[in-house]
Length: 357
Image 1: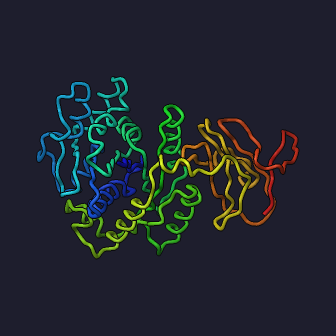
Image 2: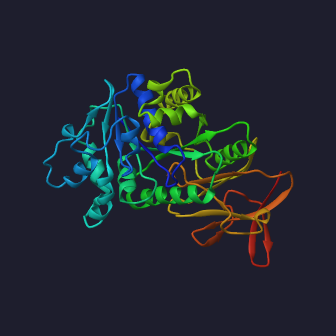
Image 3: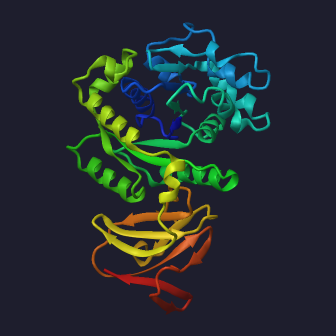
């Protein structure tokens, strides 16, 4: 069973659209899917044609009943189709944050609930709220994989950095690893900003961006308004083709545990790729790693590296023109030269690593 959290603290990025349509497309491939609505706004529940009052119990009741265990998950499940089930939510879920904050081990509640149904589903898809709070932490501790939908028209390094820092802290503090991949959404190939944003996303999340992009299309919006997945709305639309392509990619992937043995080794010197220069730094216990260089005016917060696999390997691709460059890494507030690069030059305030391309 694979548990995938669809997460982004920014609203309006296609998070719920992705959760609904990925779940529906997986179900169309005869995969048994449980979709969990963790957003108090209930957009996933509404997006499948259900309104508050049409169901007696929701995910809120399961979370708050965790200690008493008076409610069985079967009492809350709603059958959407033969292969797709839903744990719904409504506005009362907004009270869960305040209630859970006073409880011990609050971040593990959802995981314990889902562990009661390990053999029933092939996939569990978690639609997270647009914030990083108790509910999102429950999703992160329950999942083995995370999909981060990102609006290709407004890529933000800072937003992605905060989210990756949160995932990295979970790994450091608990040892819980999450396989992360970014999905570019709302892509409009006609605009330069969309193409540039997509390229920047791929440079930031080296090798962890889906080849599929979700194009901007009115069919996806109309389907949501009517409370239907894109499969039930229009199988001839671009949105349908996009989410089917995404589903094929997801099905072809191995899970986080299976991929752990295929991780590349530790540090490496800068490597020139077709997209730019790949910088790699190995720091398994680091919370933040930045690249500081002459081409960044030695700023320490401009170019973050990401520990995407949770294996301590921090990476980022930077587009550079041919030339000679000096650089260092800024690791949790400390300057570090590149241990994988023997080329160093002494300066007034210490040594810098350098390379030529």
